[in-house]
Image 1 (spheres, helix red, strand yellow):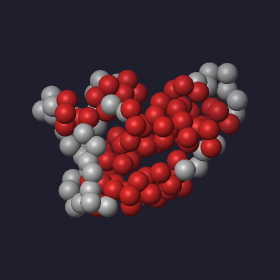
Image 2 (cartoon, helix red, strand yellow):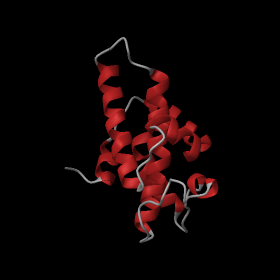
Image 3 (cartoon, helix red, strand yellow):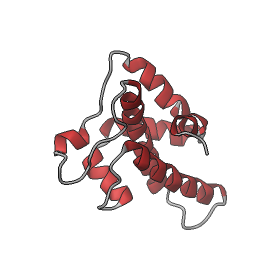
Length: 134
C-alpha cells in the first residue's frame, strides 16, 4: 500500500477538476465541509481523514470515467477540495515533526478545526500539495 504523500502525488485528474479544487480550497472550512462529506463522526487524525477522502474520490472518479448516471460533478469537486486542503495540513504537520492530526471532536474548538498550519517554507508545502492539482 502506498503512503499518503505518494497517493497524493500520483493523483491525476482532468485540468478543470484540478483547477476547481485548487480555487475551492481557499474557501475550505474544515468544520463545515468535512462534516458534510464524511458525516458527523470524524476520524481523529489527518491521515485517516485523507485515506477516507481518497477512497471516496476514487469512487467518484470511477463513476466519472464510467459515465455513471449517478455521478455528481459537484460532489466530486467538493471531495477534491477537501483533499487539497487536508493534504496541506497533513504535509505541514508531518514536516514539522508534529502529529499528523488532532482531535476534531468535542475537545477541538472551531478555530482549531478551521486552522491550516503554516510553516516557514509554505511554498514547498504548496508545491507538494498542489502537484496533483496543478
